[in-house]
Amino acid sequence: MFFHHRDLAYTVRVDKPNPVFARMLQQAIGGPEGELRVMTQYLFQGFGHRGEQKYRDMLLATGTEEIGHVEVLATAVAMNLEGAKSEQVDEVVTNPAVAARMGALEPRHFLSGGLSAMPSDANGVPFNANCVDAGGNLIANMRANVAAEAIGRTLATRLLELTDDPGMKDMLKFLIARDTMHQQQWLAVLEELGPEQATNAPGDYENEPDYRQHAYAFLNHLMDTPLPRDARWTSGPSLDGKGEFTLVEPAPAYGQEPEPQKAPPEVHAGAESTAPGGAARRFTRAFGSMVDKVTPGGSDGA
Image (cartoon, rainbow, N blue to C red; front, side, top):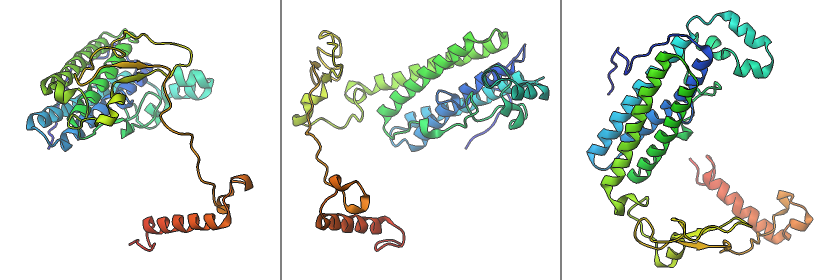
């Protein structure tokens, strides 16, 4: 259950409305590094958390805060669009393509949003939740959250460089400060979990003896460049305390050269790539049986 408070999470003040900056702010709303991403990520991590209640509460509280940040940024976009006239759309339409896209009002802010923010990035591409990480593993989720806040904080600092509006600078500095806390809190959870749980995700799976040689070996896939043997990730104890880093160069090929079976005639792969008729028929029958099992109305379908 959510409740809405009329007051914003932070004061939004725009001294000099700027439609171009409004467009740039859209990246902080609907880009893969934006607030819609972290809002959705934290909420769904919280919804699905099956461990200690305090972590669920932490995730849901922070996800709810991010809803407020979306509202702050949407308000900032709308205020930067105030005073933008329809004539500016004409300029966009008549200017050369590059100038129209990068140097004027975003057409959809007028045409689709009616001078308001939209759930999209700076290019008008709608937000896509494919960038959301909610893996159902606390360690993996915390690491994904640190990365999300790190790139989001980086975006906010870049936006700060692009405005001379005192109100926008104040708002962005607040958001940067909150991104600082969010990075720190996710890192604090990993520290609280301890090295046994927080080093590798998932923390409850151990590499089997036959595979431990691969668990701490750095493979150099650069053809002509040797790597330092005294780097932290090529020598010394692993961070989980369960192995020693090694450098393997050149990187070995652990597998065999692939030898795929020839295709049946129905595939039309060419005579030189086609199996004899008997083998082809067996392949076709097996493939047809598999299709029947997964196709509605097939032999095993509903």
